[in-house]
Length: 93
Image 1: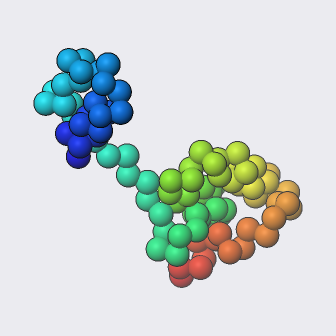
Image 2: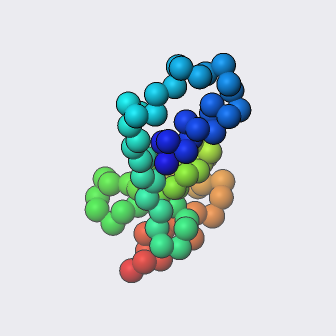
């Protein structure tokens, strides 16, 4: 895959010729776990003092502020602005 990307880069940007060496490139993966139903898990874990904000997958940064606020509301025992019941870990129990 790295070689394909390098080849395409050279095709699109000929000025990179001689500056791109795909043989020394390394690839890596940033795995982003997602629950089987595709929705994140937010809220109380069932373990005292442990709250969950996990599983947004590739939308982690997109959901971060909103999910953080919802979990902060739950931790602070405030009523969240949204119904978070469908994000509960309980849906898997």
